[in-house]
Image (tube, rainbow, N blue to C red; front, side, top):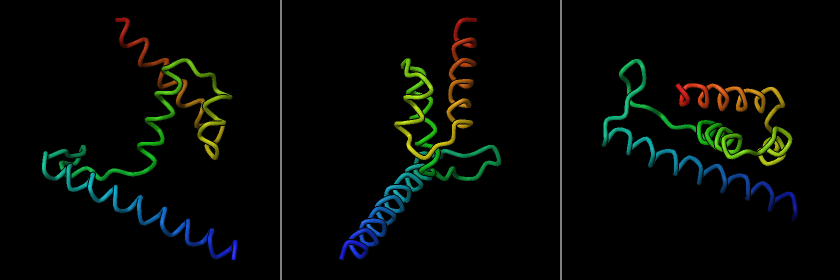
Length: 94
């Protein structure tokens, strides 16, 4: 029974992600958000996850805290968030 519940949970979670991303994609078309190629931008879960990681480092969390909050992100990715945050701080100071 537990295995069935977990599979159901994963299926529902995936459907919710897909539904939310479809709404964002429709929004991008409606307001004409395009990528570098001029095609409509397609949102991904990872983009939101990366933005969250960058915001955590901007708000002063250390790498261990960011790594723990994002659970399955690699330590290399956590370092990338820190580097991006540092670069943004330098750009804003000039």
